[in-house]
Length: 172
Image (cartoon, rainbow, N blue to C red):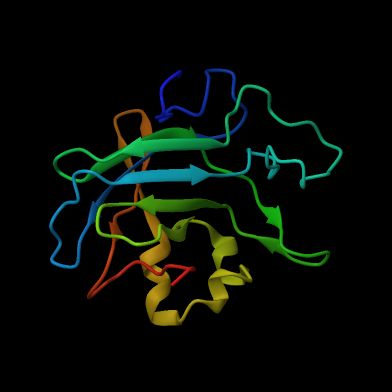
């Protein structure tokens, strides 16, 4: 896509489990935020980032773009077509569970908000070194829920900017 938004990060030949991520950006009163921007950055299905700091020898999937942007609509909705990422190293001994880095920009925010989307059906969440640092009562705010829409595998992830059930953010 040539414009500032890139909601489709995959091509038919992209390696990995093709998924759709859908959700809403909501304020503290659960009112949709119609003019937010949601950015995602993620590894490919093998757990490799398209970034110079990722020096592993395995090749990147050339048909996959690991960065996307989606604006929200009147109902605060956003979406992406992507893949479920592979696990990425945390350090020399530990892997991180598959996750997607999420940044939210919205009117009224002095700074953007940074969080992560984890997959609720992923067993390795139980040992993810970053997720384990989030207070146990807040971890569920980072879990995207899986469901089917016809033949499409969909993960639903609402982002709540403040108040009860607020998404856990890493930069506040």
